[in-house]
View 1 (cartoon, one colour):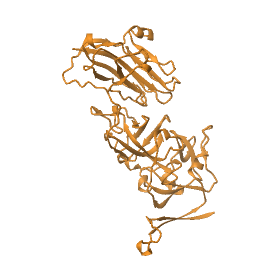
View 2 (cartoon, helix red, strand yellow):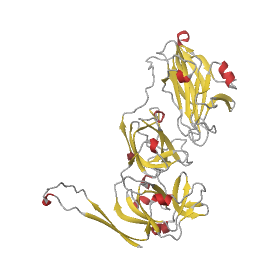
View 3 (tube, one colour):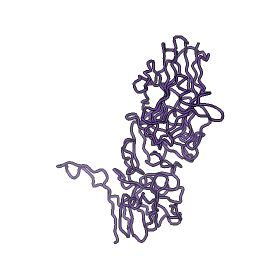
View 4 (cartoon, rainbow, N blue to C red):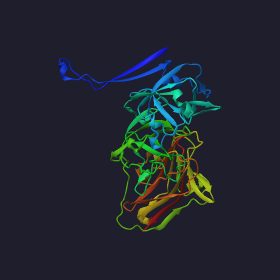
Length: 459
């Protein structure tokens, strides 16, 4: 049937009873008249046609059906490429979807907040890179709508609405909130990404191949999510903001559908002007020069099993009920210890490696150093602590967090540069132990860490 849609927006009119009529003006009417010959459905109903159990592409044929939506992506910054992300409402949205379009300047026609009408007849629905996408079927794939056919499927409304982001916490991310424009409060980048010595950019690190993923953490819950930025974005070389605050962006999934990511239209979507909310690190802050005479060194040569490691007074234990621990490994002729949740089926995997006792009183130790390497990086899951009273069980020991330099590695391969941490212990007395805690989870929190060259130095 033919439906004429007259959408009328009343501009800011409020009044109270008994107010004289000449005290306010009649608001201007903004009218968008679009003639659509067909039936209407919702994005939720559209997505319901895809059957995850079969994974088959769904084709919309011989159905004169449309849906209306609002554009929430903007490709002017280069962070979106040949696709529109649409949601069903300008505020309080319920569902969103992507539509592939063979045009690399979509913002010129379909700007942020633009209301559009999408014709389903002739389109196909498929699942790719963790999200549902509309496009044209080409054999076993859903591909972009050719530029010559865009107007046949997408009708541009005269209305541009203000998009009110849906406020969510990281724990509220779900399949239902995927492809929505969201806002997350009280969040910051992991401290290892914004140190003065190595402040990361959005997506121009040597390990960034297609996208740069930067770990964000909640100041209130400690939960994490990633900011994903294309290596083709025009702001890829900008440094990450070092404070804490709020972020607005499109909620999506990473390329391998392993975890949620936030994708921003441009850097103004981050308001990180607040103070950081890091856990309190223990620091000695020695004012004098620290001598580097090696008292003890463990390079793990000859360590081929946990029995050998235990004989050298190291404690290596899985406290989450699984079997995976730090594992003696040979890499290019070099012995080291490796930990990863990959291919373990353990969720969570909490493993502790605790050093032999360091007797500061007898050795006058003032510095601890060690080398770390990250590979197949999909998050930072290693922290380093110390204690002055190790009970033999990491769960019943009082630990203090150390400001160790946790490395960032390539997501799709092995790292090749160890990062050295130097821990000043010159203000401590008595005996201490250093603890390495890995808290990962299969299948998506599985970064591999290698540990080597643990040294204690003294005056």
